[in-house]
Image 1: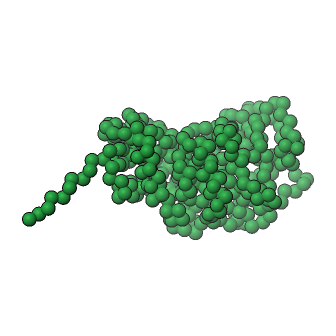
Image 2: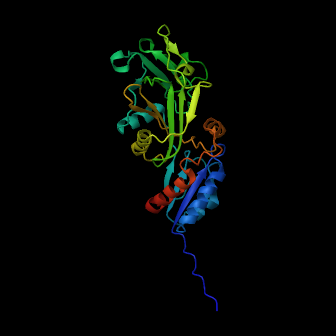
Length: 319
């Protein structure tokens, strides 16, 4: 006599994970898909490319309530239905305004205009100037000035490839951290999945007879730099708060600094464009080497965490 095995339950919802060539390894999403299928038979998971229409996946997924996650904004893949969480192109100015409106501790900032005259009472002795252009990256165009020396430059006065030609420049108060440092916390719906803390081994030293400084003079740089993961509760909490200030962006790379003396934390940006899937983007090997690890997911069990959160979100929000 044989016992009939109950038929597997039919999935009730769909989840589509969208990867973009050269920004995420599809194998990462395959691992996340496997974790989801192990714990949630009610969810059918699809992996689609952002570089092609993926018409078959689009058509099949339209049959049920669906949730879509893409680190980057949707390009060629256009879902027929579903709740979408995707990266967003956003100027630095718009991003900072959103975060400030959400109550985040953002250093004082403003657009540099022809009549701009910065007050040392507000900004202190030093100001960072940075481009607001949304495609500026890796610190391109960022310079530190003595506050009285910040002045407007017309776009055409910048070199041909300078992002200042594309959008206004911003002045932002410089936060003295004692030692050059920055901490990146990568979060997924506000939950940490990777941290990357960099700090110089040499105290900050900005000679009084200089009016302009390059990033290597006030940011942690090799070889005088230590790098490690951190679980400092206040840093992780600020990163979680940042998600609540911009909840439509699921993947956030929060850059956080700590002020000398007060210990106060400041949020610089969250990188909403989504090119920060640090596990397999173009910088992944550098992160692994700096942290001395072979697997960036281990510290926070990142892919299982992503899988768990996606199950919760899909069940609650699929449309």
